[in-house]
Image (cartoon, rainbow over all chains, first blue to last red; front, top):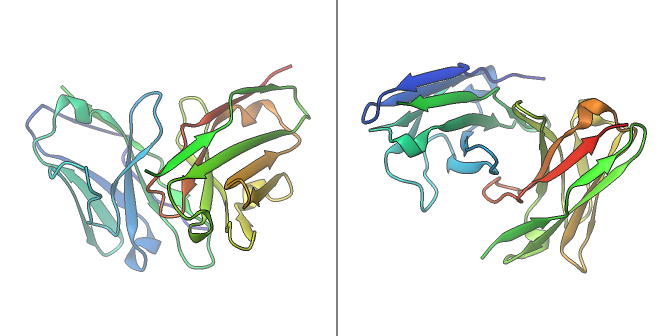
Length: 107
Length: 114
């Protein structure tokens, strides 16, 4: 099995840049995805293939990768970006795994 | 538009089984795998397994091996997740998510309580 490690919380003021990291050996070989989840709602995909943004996701959301760490960056974070964020990856012949989640506070 | 519509909330007693459905529409059902993911109250996302709607093959997370069964009905574009020998720790919201995890169902709350 393998693990993805995220910080439990990140806090920024509105307009600042929020960065959330996700680390794991599998990330050196496989793409990561990022999800945003607001209370009482299903997760929403915000980044795939490490840095691609699905249609409808604001441009302030971006992703990057370096070695065994991927980073979700929210440039100019807004109050409505306050949510839990999860990274996700899957390796061939291995089960999917989610990171433990990061609570982003914007205030 | 792509939609995944799940069955309603369930309350079960310990030791019972639950079967949750996920009806897909807006795309070719057999072209995308389907994941099942759960989330216990206040906890993170936990992957349970995946089914290929085309041939019915499955892969389950080791934690759920022997207790979970995922099936599909191509005539109704519906996938099912059955979890047996329920215990209180299985209380969670259960989600289906299309293969690229780009679309998710609305979630089904399963409560296990005596």
